[in-house]
Image 1 (tube, one colour):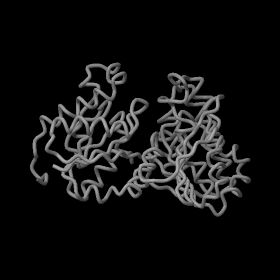
Image 2 (spheres, rainbow, N blue to C red; image 1 turned 180 degrees about the vertical axis):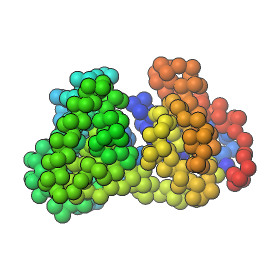
Image 3 (cartoon, one colour; image 1 turned 30 degrees about the vertical axis):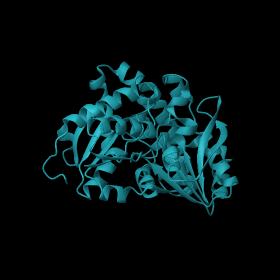
Image 4 (tube, rainbow, N blue to C red; image 1 turned 90 degrees about the vertical axis):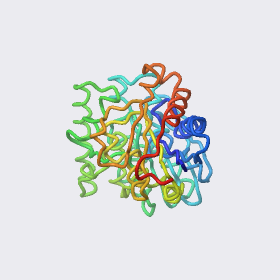
Length: 355
């Protein structure tokens, strides 16, 4: 078989590039006769810049505010007149220095993302593509706007610039499917903190609507990266799937057209995975070429019935293979590689797969 190995990052344990290398190494040992092509992917979250850089461009670093008080060195990619920035580089969960808490959930802000945009503007770019995902903030992008001098100044600064919000989810800013309610608990917020964050974003959304005349809080993807999507939409950004941005740049369509099997993966395969995230987006793209998809994930919480309408034929949990969450995280690369080898050795050509 020709196997395309195209995972996303595995949370904070493995980048997409590292995960792709581990899966490929294990699969080659298990099925040495297969032609294995490594093609790491991203849906806009952590690893977005690194994955895009595999197709060229100049990686640069800027010192910007982190999500709390300390500054961070954030990577961004310059390619001709286009800048690719990544919210997780400035406000990612991994920048907290420890597990998220209620205090960090309430204090985290997106100023660093705004300063990355300012750095890109200083470089004279005409297009800015912002990958959204993996953030520890839920400020609705208010910090981003403030870093650019406020709504009026931010609008003026980005006038004539093509802004693209590359979102990993379709969630809106407010309500039961919004940034605070859905993602706040993952960022350390308890029920009371979620209510505080929601109330802040309600007030912020009113300001955005008053300034723009548009209910940007209702736009799909407005809740991405803690609501940074809403702020970008207020500045005139167009939304694109982060997975599609990467797919176009890395020549994914040609790879899928030549494949017999796609292997992808992420940190946790759950119901959020079915709402525009990379794994199911890639599976849909593969299905268009008649190619089935195998998913590796740190944890799998879905049953086969949950993804029966996709071209995903099987899912494999690194945690189950490792025997514990602790080992799966501490020995992430080795466990993923071992799982890939074990799966490859047992793999059977199923009806409908090309040979």
